[in-house]
Image (cartoon, rainbow over all chains, first blue to last red; front, side, top):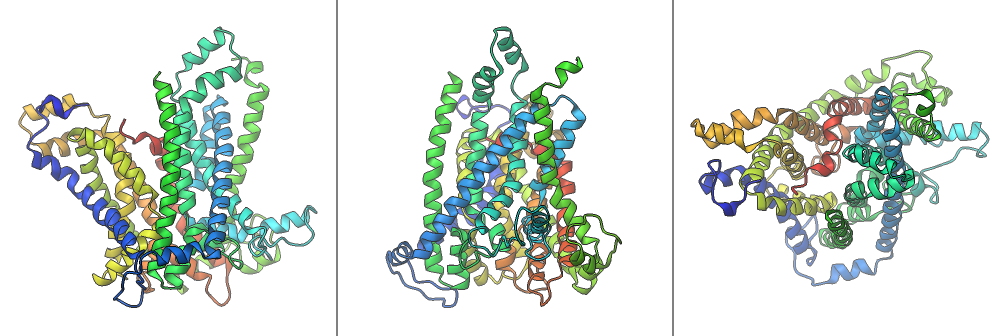
Length: 305
Length: 278
């Protein structure tokens, strides 16, 4: 790659043309991402609502109101459960799937499994929500009927109206959606490992567990780490699935932070308070990502060594 | 290879595990499709029979003509296509610019992209609603396209950087010596080389715009401008929820997405993590 310090090669020209290439994308980032972030931060210190145009500064009042609101803490707890179990489930099931796919020699079987795995990933959120709602339907749903038929349950299970089942059911759906994504991406990373390393290890008498620990794992752990970060952020911020399936119900039993923000800002029309809650959500994610990336960059340094 | 070596316990386990995964992965799609072709009487009478006794197009007719989903399909198509064209154009320029002219900016750009990926859409939608209201863009497809740039462009740049990295600089220098200016080099030399990558990126942008729900729900309220995802959700509000029409409507949303996804599957695998400028 060319370096700016070494002077211009013939391909680099006046600085203006160079900027024309990147300017539109920068404008998008500034207007549609940085500006909204700053204005949310500003609103979070005001009493702005959706209805009135005028507003005044109220200091930390929104933050205090939120942090003393028990509903906020319930939603935060649900968000943690929803994210931790979804991501762990997705990673374990997807990771094992990738290792299995990598063992299969027949190219036809490989591509069939790969395409099958891609299908949930390609499901639009609305289709995921409505299909599972129908599958789990409490009167005519396929899954509750089957469970009853095989005598596993007395009567039909009400997955989405039972407060103790609603989060596990949503997490199951989220794992269905996300595990294939991990599978396909980890499989792609596994393919980049040079085969001769395994052959050399085999000649040296390494067991397959040892090969896995000393060849496979170091090669793919940064990719897996990055996938975990991206998935965690995505799942934590996910609004669509829960909103479409339960809307946070029954009685708030599946309300996560994005649902809480929606209820405050759109149903309650309190823009200032919803903004403060969004900033708290973002802060939490930033802290989490900084920690994740510390671990990943440590791995990267070890890999170079 | 001998048969003995082929069927080790590990391989057997792999087949069993992947078969279970594949069945669970595909079953909802199958169920969605067969439900869409069942009559409502049959759906409710036999909840666990898989194939319909009688295949009917009734649900699709209801959705398309009685419920006027043709309007929503048109809205979704317009928004998704315009988003795709603009976002792919902007992002191709940017990805090339980063690779060729601002390799240092590339490192910062990767960090910016990961940071913006963290922004919750539920947070961004508040200022979008406020600004769009004052610009009279709420309830317009143009406003929606504008907002869709916020997630399309960063992601497309991220994907395209990976593809543009593969273009050797020697070819470009040769074209420059032959008298081509910078934009000619870009359009006549570089673009043709990365066309497959650009096509996959464009398809990915299209799928995401086609599937988008939150912004379309909160920024467009007039039913004439509603996109498909939101229209499907509003079916639930009907007095009598007809699951047959719901499944037919869902089938209309899901099929383009799945077909396109399978087309670009090779490009997308790894694409999530390849784009990083190292």
